[in-house]
Length: 111
Image (cartoon, rainbow, N blue to C red; front, side, top):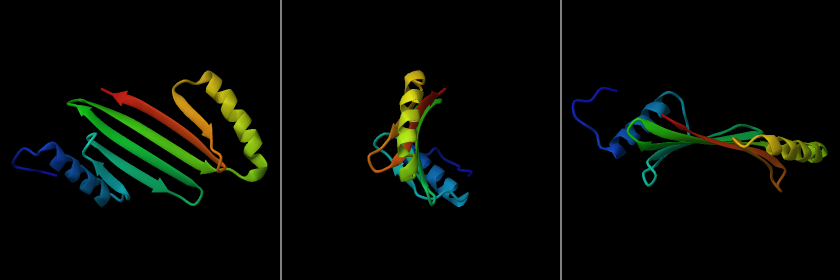
């Protein structure tokens, strides 16, 4: 994208979303309130959500959530593993939901 004039932040976000859509990214949404871009990708058995949050010039945050459907016969095992993982890993949030989904949430600030 080449422009001859300065863009407002909202215009820049919209241009970014449009450019990513042109690259094949789908389900992108602009969140002007927190100055971010939301993206969602859904497969047959999984969902991945991403938020790119533009905090200030040169710094942004990324939050993501991945969710997988777990078979009934393995849900107890997955729940046990989630509890063990969470004891030793403070950077990510692992969960087993009541609806039988395994979920991982993570976030990071990028400078």
